Image (cartoon, rainbow, N blue to C red; front, side):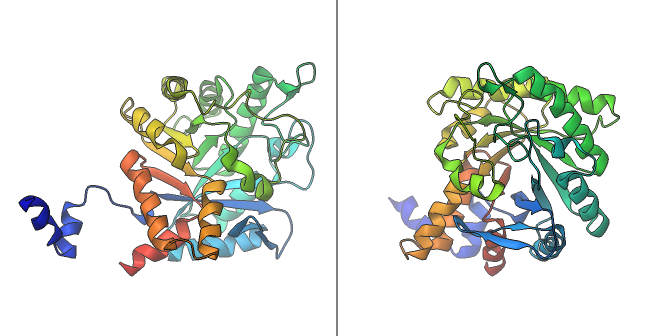
Amino acid sequence: MFQRFRRTRFNKHLRALVRETTVSVDDFIYPLFIRSGEGIKTEVSSMPGVYQMSIDEILKECVELKQLGIYSIILFGIPDVKDSIGSDSLCEHGIIASSIRTIKKHHPDMFIVTDLCFCEYTDHGHCGIIDEKNETVNNDATLEISGQQAVIHAKAGADMIAPSGMMDGIIETLRDALDKAGFENLPIMSYSTKFASGYYGPFRDVAESTPSFGDRASYQMDPANRREAINESISDEKQGADILMVKPALAYLDIVREIKDNTSLPMAVYNVSGEYAMLKIAQKHNLIDYERVVMETMISFKRAGADIIISYHAKEVALMLQKK
């Protein structure tokens, strides 16, 4: 009891000195959604403060991010034309490849991560080539074009590749393709444990990637499977991943901690659209102390073992940290 009483008398400077978990602006990667055109900045109704933007607006956004101390972004492309194999993502002049080159030209100090998948680029909204017979993704055929996509991103100037499709063998495939193309040192951040989650709904609005049939449960993780979830990440480490990730974050912090305890690799979490949208709705209706809950959520990610946080809250958190 005496020790507890003494702790309550710590002043703020001493509390900071003994704090076990801290959040820094350097922990964050900020998602950006790019589409063709000029002067486009369209807010997503289900995600207040998140926009689809044309590249000229993205360049302005990069200025704002750097002023806040955020230098890491992850890009998602929304092409004008979608087809069965996501051809735009396999083109050197596609939306992502073109955007990487433009951002690097104007903001060479930005660290650009590219989301490598096909759901935003296919007319069916799934993460690869469809096996028409079984109406599911053909894993091996998707691996082949994933390697092509990774090399295109690398040649355009990407600083890190982040494959999100959860295809079996994806990390080994990408590592092999990148190494053969001369990008041996380009890191891969694996979406190593990505659950078939209900928290992704708003993302599918902004990325325009809702599946036209079925769902993604056949190639994403069952939320009920703890041991399998850990094994997926450990398998990606063995295949050559440089960073492991758990997605979504908030409902799976037990998985984050268990993977962290079983790997020496850095850990990332993706604080997904549904998690973001819930706090935004609560803020709108004055149900919570919004800033306090956002920061508490970020601390929970770090406490669980995350080294990197991909979050739509990143700009807000940067402003909160400046107030301290």
